[in-house]
Image 1: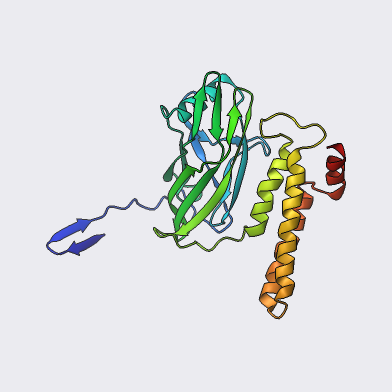
Image 2 (image 1 turned 90 degrees about the horizontal axis):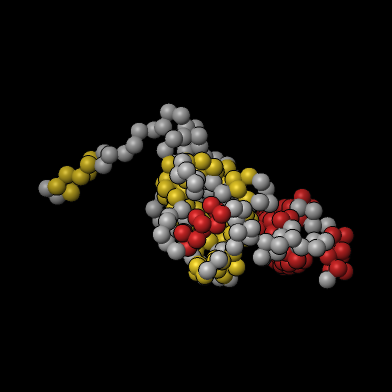
Length: 270
């Protein structure tokens, strides 16, 4: 590709299409993180979320909320987090530019915190931003946002959470795949409930306190959307959209076992 700039000629060299890749991502298709292992430095699956038992993945083009419980299971993991917090070691990750391809967009995950003796204070709020063009990822970035600093030592579980946003090309115009909406917000809360762990990573007796928070927040969201729907009954599209969101929210609550009997048992135990 060549472009004339006055008397100067600018030549851009773009990578050839990856022959092993699919044509492009579809909205909602899974994008899996790869990271360098902390002990050997080789590329492999990204961090495994304790609540799912699977590596962290995101949905292409869908604005959503991230929730992932990361277990600091051993001395190697704790030492790596300590070094990342102290900014003496980077957390190198990457995402495939195209599904199944061998070209990757770099993604360095910074961790904000304080190292104190045999423990850490880690800011567990991280936002992730992607730029995409024609079904391909052209940029990825993550950054911490000051929130609660979680007490962490070997054996703790870090409750990583934050927003995921997708933008068109090199702009800050939303990509338009924000179908996650209310479902995404409930999913993030429900993830905490299903994990059965509190913020310190300790097992909750009977149920997680997050169950009550998830149920309450989800109910409030559903009521708000339903009221917005009925106040605009003359607009058929709004009615349909709100109804679908409500059904999606209720379905997710059921999938995550947040049934009234569970909530009553939790409230009774407190």
